[in-house]
Structure formats: structure tokens, C-alpha cells
Image 1: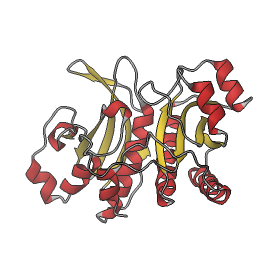
Image 2: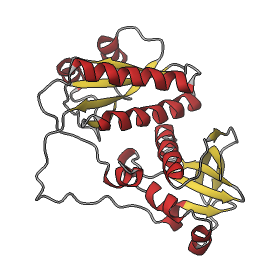
Image 3: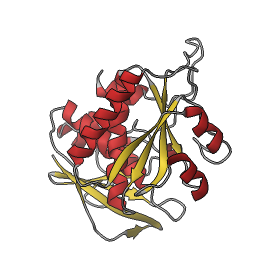
Image 4: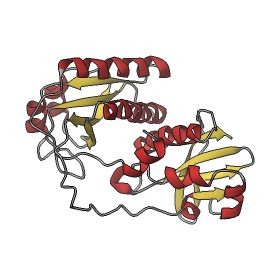
Length: 270
């Protein structure tokens, strides 16, 4: 599957068949998850399979979910963050999106579910004692077929001019410059990457031979989960047009421009 099509057509699955995923497929998915953990290599996160979807759903109903609504699925995968740091969250969400790509190859649906506000007693009943903390789980299962005659409304997406700056925050970049540097398609398709409530909090600064990723603060907090997600999709889209590279995380101080606070997340060589 072309990554551009995956991005453009990617939608969360909110309805699943009442049918377990085969044991063999679950094992392959979790083995791939272990490979991702080793690939990133600093033990900042790990995946935890929750096989009994009915139990998870009953415990979390009314407490967690997608946009506040708990999603019922046969299985869930927890993203356990092993240290409470920005970088661990970014790496963990990047890894989860990579795992989602593999899950999709098996014809399964997925949906991110927030359980940040769930009480510790309920979390302990779900997982037992953990080394770290789980604020997000992934619903996985066989999706209920959608009616092909019902057209879902498209999500509103920001334009390239809204998300890409030249040299510094807020300075517009000309479309001709992106086109001449072969970056128009990259940013066009990157706009379709998922984000919490489709807020699209990420922005990019083009500086000479580097692209800097920054994140907007929303309601007094940064959604570092969204940073990891956009980094994963950006890397894959870049690779699809022949630009190889990896994000390098930054630790610059937050900056405020026109009343908006930004966090410098990482830079990518082009």
C-alpha cells in the first residue's frame, strides 16, 4: 500500500465484529511490537496485550475512550511509558503508529483510546502492577463493514501554508519554493496524519537543509503523543519520495510567538 494512500484514507475503526483475532495473528503482532521496542532500544516504552476485550470495555466504559466514548473491541494493546518524560511519550507514540501499520496489513482495524483520566484503581485492575504507566490503549479487531453508499464527511485539514514556515515561526513560505525543492507532495500528504481530535498541533520550519518540527501548546499542555505520530508518518512519506533520514529530538526551551507557546520537538535533515 502506498503511504500516501494510507495517510489519505486512514480512519479510526470504531465498530468491531464480535470475533476474536486468531492467536497466531496476535502473536505475530506482538512479536513485531517487541522488534520495535528493540529497534528504538532505550527501554522507554513497551506494548502490553490485553486479550480479554470484554473485561477492558466494562472497566473503562464511562471512564475512557475515543473523544470520551469507550470503543468496544475484542482486544486492546496498551502503550506503557516506562519513564515519565516527553521523549518517552514521543518515542512510544511513534512506535505505536508503526505497530498500527503492521496491524493494518492483517486487515484489522484500530483506534487510539485515551485513558488519561481513568483512576489508578481501575488501571491496576486492568494491568496489575506496572513498571510504568499506561495513558493510551489501542483497540484492535476485525472491523464491521461500512456501507459503501454512505459517504463519511472529510476532516478539515489545514493548508500547507498554515503548517510550514520559512526560517522562523510565523514566517510564510512560498509554494514555489517548496515545489522547487521537491517538498510539496511531502507536506501535502503529511497533513492527513491523524492527531487528537484532529487538532493538527504540529508545525514545520524549513531552515536551509533541515526541517524543524514544533508543537503548539493547547489548553496549557502539549500533546506529545501527536508529536510521535507525525514524526512516524513524515519519515515514511519522506522515504516514499526518496528522502532518507530520521528525526533527531531537540531539547530547546519553549518559545512564545503571538501568544502561542511552541515546543521544539526535533529536526530532520533533507
